[in-house]
Image (cartoon, protein in one colour):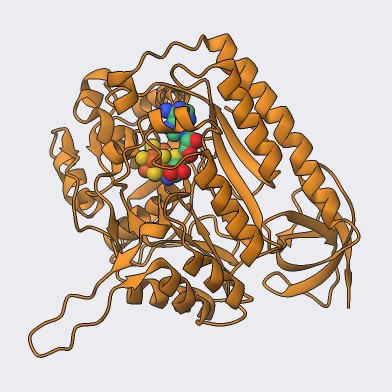
Length: 477
Ligand code: SAH
Ligand code: SF4
Ligand code: F3S
């Protein structure tokens, strides 16, 4: 996968190996858990739920897998190389397990769901395989392994949202956090494995979402990102008992407003918006609340209507452009990012040019770009020939990446000379003389530390220059 430098990685298997360190919340058993996550933010968010469940069961966490009693790897199946990375990592666990035969090795997440018990045959060191909807069963499954058997639970659920579990915030900067608002996906894009690994779409209780946002705010957090594969199809209806008056269904625009109302000091972001579902109501809600960030991740996948149809995206080029026009009309300052796939089955050179011309039309602030990778079991794998040669996919990808680099730079240059409202996230990666944080449009801004301001505070920064991924400036009053 090729990708430009950026901070907000919502859908990207390149984030990896993030471990954590926490003490138990229940009665300690002294057993140590190591968990590492791959894939999209949803997976990282799930790892926080897993940690919460095990901490409640007396585990403590460690950042060193070599000293762990239980080693979990939360996996991604989105592209073949994502799976390869996990298999390579499992090999590295082998020597630790040889030294400590009591060590429990578990595979969680999307690859676990896709391969199920086959994993146990393919990777001998794996003891437990657990799908995304079965994490409540983990303490029980670990017990089974302790008793000498292998354990698998890959049941998908129509209801599970883990709404009542407060995630332990791992590797957090204490300023920004993710909140899952829904699970699964009902869309069946033909290239995508997610509906198979994550099951049916379901929305989480809106009150539990708001409560979590409020707790985070009280604990000093100043930014939440609401997560779902297709946030625009969020809908929650409270089940009422006899005698209670039924409440109307809450849609995504309404949920956004509810979270934004927690405090004007709490920034609200969300991902991912589906072009077929994003409504003007959502856009108007964004425009109405200053604290809802003016940034939309709107994956286009392809600029060709014929390819979009094969992809089963259920919108065409014109529809997508109309949605972009609506964003520009209702929220003129809005940043837009996207996902692009190059070399999908039967994609012609002209159709690839249509993707480039779509990019030209939107001039995205940022993009995740991928060469098509056939996934077993998907509609595309069943119906279409993966007939674009690898080198053609890669060449088209390079062209898309180069185009995006131009546009990222163009967007950043437009910010230069302007004052940006930035939420300070902490010290910059390069130097503790500098702070970093993002502007409304999700662009990273770096500026010299000013002792009067601390992480978690908002400052106004004059952008004085930029690289292709970062604005550089100074605080102004
Ligand atoms: N729910 C989001 C996408 C989640 S997957 C949406 O609908 O946009 C993140 C991105 O991975 C997708 O947008 C797509 O660009 C890419 N992707 C998914 N399956 C892929 C495949 N088989 N090959 C290459 N890229 C893929
Ligand atoms: Fe996959 Fe499409 Fe669902 Fe996104 S909307 S997760 S691309 S099936
Ligand atoms: Fe996310 Fe990868 Fe699963 S992108 S939903 S972890 S397949």
